[in-house]
Length: 332
Image (tube, rainbow, N blue to C red):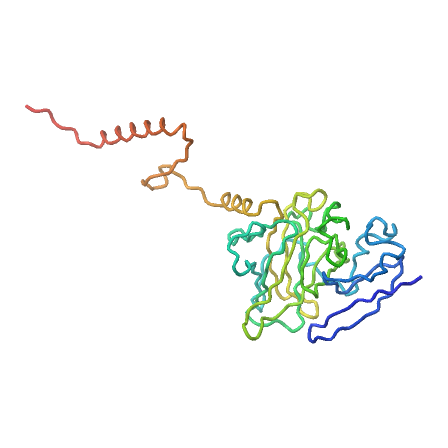
């Protein structure tokens, strides 16, 4: 028996709404071209032969990666198979993480310019701007790809751990139902986000976001919101491995025209981890004689050691001052 799922698609250029009838059968692979997070499922959806509420109820012959495949052609992400560097391209492409207006400090995520690294809690939206010096070709997209930093695991897919990928997990619950792509490590709230699998590169997960030009009236860049859905410490994947995200600006023909790379750490205490990393990377200040600096130095000690060290310090200062005084000749 074949069921029909009516999916509403909002056009970006107008307010027209298209109603597409998508036939599917239980043995078919579900394919979704564009799925907003506000997706509404039909009232009789649970009457089908299998239910969204039980991921394990999927037909065993259908791999999990195929069950999340998109109907649209996946972008080619071969450029990230090896370590890549920033490349602004002819359009001066930049990726800027910004705090919402009126928010000075946030414990949920923070960005280090010194480390070029994002620190964030799991399942917290981070505000980001895609900025160019001049407009890219109309219809360009930004392909967001998560990869492992270590070259040994570079071609492995960064996806969610088994526990968080379960449809019953709270992070997969939406006001209108279950999230259609529970295994994706990165999510975006843009209504035209495409969740893609690059089958040519081992089913690598990636998001395709339409490049939104700044508003004509204010020239303010469009704000995207990205969330990362597993901590780096989660077992299996990411499995305590360092990760980075490559933002690829692609032309309408699928050609890479710019690229930005940002390391991402999903953790419990973003501010603490950022402070630790920046302090570890800061140059150490030597107090040795080769420094050429005779100025005072600071020494941090415990309270119980302070009195003793102060006596030692005063004794050394007295001895030093005595040595610097000229010797007086005895009176005749």
